[in-house]
Image 1 (cartoon, rainbow, N blue to C red):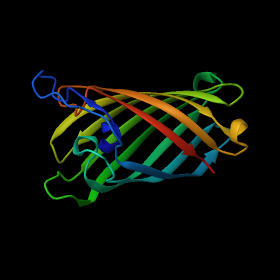
Image 2: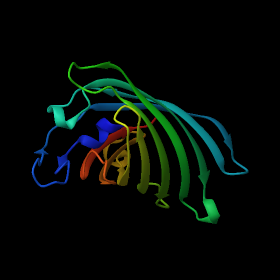
Image 3: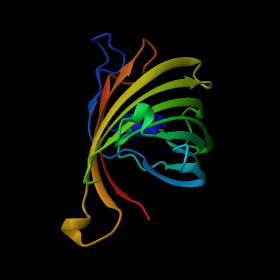
Image 4: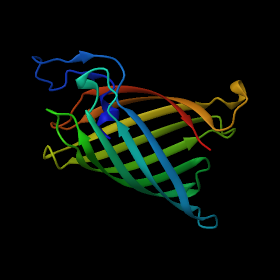
Length: 191
């Protein structure tokens, strides 16, 4: 997931000397996610998936330079503590590179996600808080990424089904963080 968080890097090492202030497109990232088990009575589900990262960044600092895969599993609780329109979904993902550009580092990471989701009553808007703990086995560092995503469904505007857009600012936490912050803009299609 490292590539996704390098859409915009600012003051990457926080020493005031080697500031990186670049913008452009990061790596292309797509995910297949399915729910093989759902217990409606207990309001709990298991989701599994595979995320793929393609090295498509316009600048080296904006991407990983590696084709990577990230199998993942989530356990989702709907309306925890009886709070309607919410979900708590802790998850685990293991990301590894299979083809890395010469001169770039391989990717080998464990990521623990702690999604907290709120969906509006009309199901048109959402907010997502996603603290992620990243253990980078290749670089031998640990850090945290804190994302806040805000999104809206677009179906009523386009006459489609499952189309949405979102804005996801994030901040890096910890002395080993690869970036101070990032902004991700995205378009999702769920079918």
